[in-house]
Image (cartoon, rainbow, N blue to C red; front, top):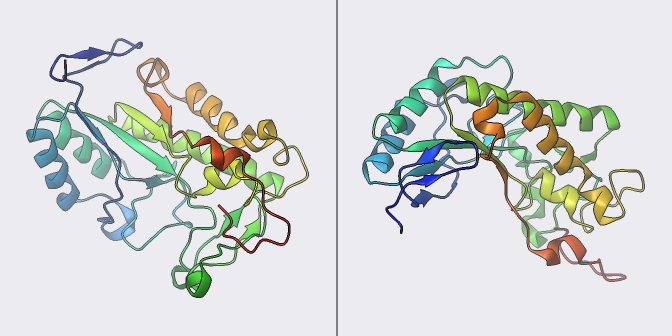
Length: 244
């Protein structure tokens, strides 16, 4: 069954059931854009026979990056380099989905830029904690901006020829931070109960689905699921454990 085509609910067909999972490449060129190196990499993966290639995380805000080699795609980013990236995969028969992400507080201190979080709770990594910037609690306006940025990035990805987007809500990035009761200590509609902590993720999914066309909306808009323990774990009284 691995090599049998798979037709998705939107009518798009993957050539087989083999998928390359997302992993950050850190191969951006000037302007946080994809270039020849990443085109060659994805062409090689497509030649290897994978039916679906999921990119490493592409940031929705160029002011908030996980590293100097991070690719970013915003509403007004030039699309030509991204179109070349998709063509490198399509030329060899593979579909390509873009993983879209915001790092939240997981921004290196020496990188500068914005370190936003649901609450002003820094990463607790012991002696390595100072490697990361101290986050500021997001305002309602900043939350609305992030929702719009995810939708704009998904739309731009579609315009560039990507076959789908994967919304990254794991690995301690911004959406994972909102889901976690350890990182999210808000007392408004964006924090507290599981329903409130999931509000941002669901708002982003709805905004993306409203912005993209039928091909993405019909079955290829995905998000990373989290283990239940991340959603329900409570900080122990007096605990100095890492906020997740």
